Length: 331
Image (cartoon, rainbow, N blue to C red; front, top):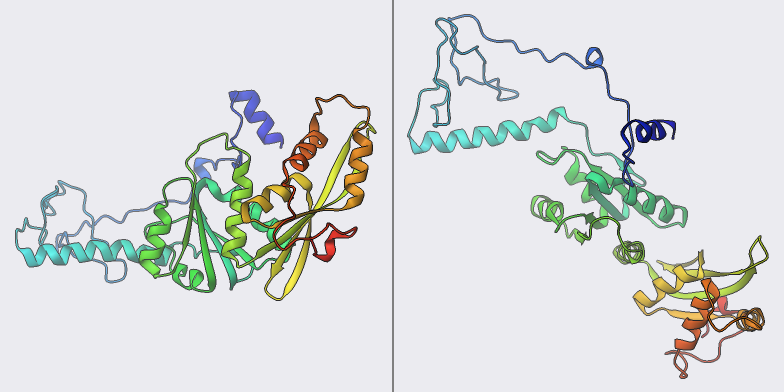
């Protein structure tokens, strides 16, 4: 918090949502990068490789007795002479590819936040970290089997990536592009990863949160069976009222009730055609609360009244009258 304030005072720049400010390491704190340049004439071959890493021996260009060709033309394996041989070209391509792939031995494995196997893995990379982690934490508190992994290396992928993505029934990959990571993961590991993309930029409109929540619930095999507007509570100021609601989820063979703002519950319901139930007590209290007010209602009460007036006269599909206790499931 203090670091963010100091950053804004000094630069006038406010960090974007999902970003974190970190102290940069001093030069003295960075690990040394040492290059053991070859200095002996005997046994030097510019394209001879380390058998483990496939890295070449390096010699400073122009060192007497160690002169060798550099540049973009294909070189012969071991000797480093310019080569136009097609078989050598094929071999060198494979060597370069293998050298990059072996970097996976030196990078950190892909870490998983949450269960190491289960129903849903949300896999991300880059600046989507904060939004994904917040959503996953909320779903985990609600009892949903969901985990989060975030890629920090894309070529090569961490060596355990295949093991991670195959440990879950469903994989969802949200990206602020057209789905580049999703295509790579599907091609590399042959998993049916689902892509959720958004390129609207900042600021994002409010429905984005509800759309993302629906995508995650669907990918996890969780169904919203109904939402309930169950109470009308006067706020602390005594000047207004707030509607309280619940979202009912079918998670495998059990039902989970999640407390919610009525507006959020309704926003989710209209995205999946779930039943929207309102207790008679709420309707009666809303009518009393609205008496004597101007026609131009504002705030949540006005939004709720507009919603009620937009409902059709016919009962909802599978319906009936709304019971006093709508949490029982009839509509």
